[in-house]
Length: 173
Image 1 (tube, rainbow, N blue to C red):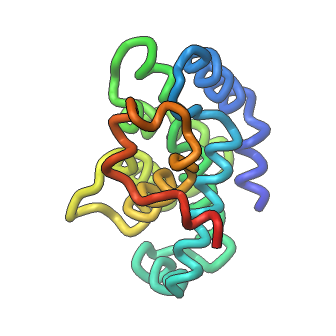
Image 2: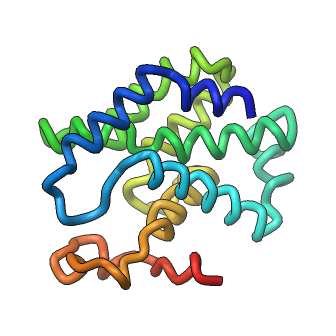
């Protein structure tokens, strides 16, 4: 996955992840670090594979093949929270801001305009579930929720997301 490796090695991506960690250092809730992003990428891909939706995704999105589809899913997972630090600092919607930040990273990594549109839309959509979400946006939303082992979190009683999310029990099976 050459293009995904390119994202991971991009100094701007590393800077965004470091901003996230610094901004959330005193937050008792979920962290938005590299480990979380990798978890979301893997779970999104697993959701697609387990539901035998990979070929559908390729056809629906006009993607060139399985390797490109895998890179798209992983890129979306790795980039979905890159704007979180800006939400901490200025209160902006991290999903919308992150979708804008992702464009340059994706271009430098070699994704084409169709792939960038698919990924940035999924990033934009991942925060809130809705009836008109894209295929990848819905999978990214679910993967983001499933990536958290909330049942073990000490701050769950104060968490606004805990009561309204799919449980992380997915990770145990």
